Image (cartoon, rainbow, N blue to C red; front, side, top):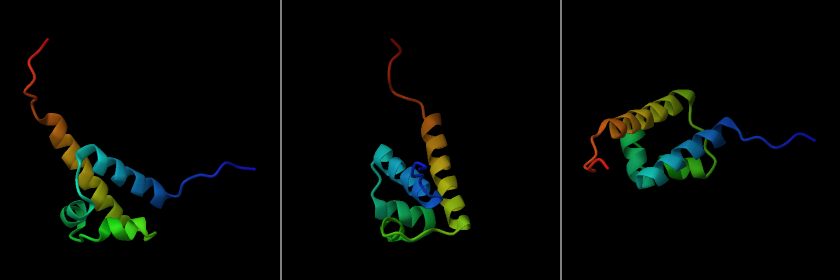
Length: 79
């Protein structure tokens, strides 16, 4: 028997959920800024699959914010 694999929708949702945890962003705020829909995450969690265009838009939004965060200087003093 083959092991169970996750669907693309499940991978996508896991990526978004990981981003929310890492950044402390509320799901409704994320949905509003990423795609203009505060219920976006609620719908995903209920099993709705995004279109490819929407998934691309969301992943580009996440990538942009992660890149901006990586470029921010830290206030830590070198050891």
